Image (tube, one colour):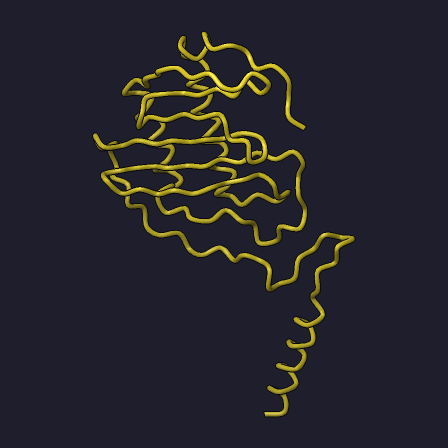
Length: 185
């Protein structure tokens, strides 16, 4: 019993000694997010007829870029000149390839992207806001690369967004949009 008390006392001392060090920007154990096991993949193997998504992204919290299959639109951030939008339609093959990538990463089960230790931050950083609907079930989440250490899921979602963005940037409707002027700091 004395040994158990000694172990508990030692754990209490270690936990109490884990304070935030602002010079090193390290967070205590109690401020860390612990990833949970992902739920089983609920996405059908084949893309259903009711599949749509919207992703809004940009630098910091300026999420002016948007790819939206619910409305069939794309919006481009022109930075100093506002935004420009166009109607856009994905081919069945493009949507199917996007769906399969989403299914591969089990995107409908993703809820949280916070790294276990988030003390280091990037400036500038990007942020994405997602809404995905598959067969009437919707998943919404926000993702950021603000923290230096990205989770595997965050890296997968970033790759997915870049994959979708590459498809959009090849479309004639997007190419016709004005060029952005200026920049973000």
